[in-house]
Image 1 (cartoon, rainbow, N blue to C red):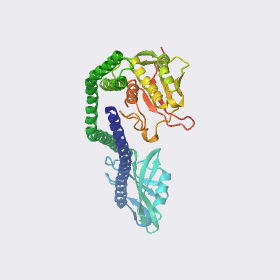
Image 2: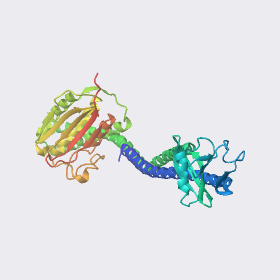
Image 3: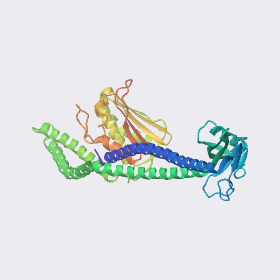
Image 4: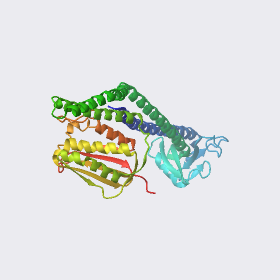
Length: 428
């Protein structure tokens, strides 16, 4: 697994951890907000209940059982001036008329409702209502006489302050939840990095080894190949060691190709994201590459068909992009030439260009789909290739902010199909 794959894995692990944490924290946040709202309403209810019960001691029958007396103290419950933050208290007589309390604190319909609440014998009732368009909370306590309920003591408090407190606390809880989630995501990122550190170090050592080994082997292999070619020229194809020299030359050629791939991979790893990009006619590049590979495809028993009807301009490094597409063509020739036809299709839609290379070979076994872009991976039962062509092609695609993928198998069209997507050059 390359360093890029490990970084992707770290991001996926962090995203999964952060996603699960977000769901849990959102649920806990919702529960906390509901509980805070309940607590504020309970505090308001207790305050209203205490006020209504305490005020009921200053309204009582006297003499005539139907006569209601209200004790109007200068600082009593029914005066126009109440302590800041204290509920307003009114007295609603049995007739439904408000006989004590600040003017406009409770209208006649609400006064009759308050009486109806306490006439069933219960000591106290609390409910939401509205007075003059303002949401309020009411608590009613009865004043009993010998003939039944003489009046209702009603404590009234607007809900605006309580709702404001609930909104404030909800915002604080939400901000605390967001902060906790960010810390959780950061912790997930750090933990994922710590867990993947051995693999990351191994990938770095592998990349360094690839670069060092390729540089060290390049010259000796070139010398072996040159000496084999020289010996063949000196003794001719009929010489006693011609067969061995030809085998040495072919092996050296394959080794040179593998070393070249290793060097290319090392350069891509070292220079990822730092390439010179220029406007490039992708359709012309495809025509050139198809022409270069036609002879090899014919020798393998296949033909290459190009479908690129329209000019398509991308911003790319011509050498790197050509190397990536060439690797796809070579892969199709090596593994899919038995089908007789290799189709190369160029399409442009929206802001990206798409190149598809499809062969008619046996395709990629499902068990190998996940590993097809791994370094040095080669299909089982096949020969040739370094196992670096597809990883190089994918790195080139990603270096151009694009993507290379193996499409799912299609029963109607057997074989393998690789799709390369890169951004198009914006129109002038």
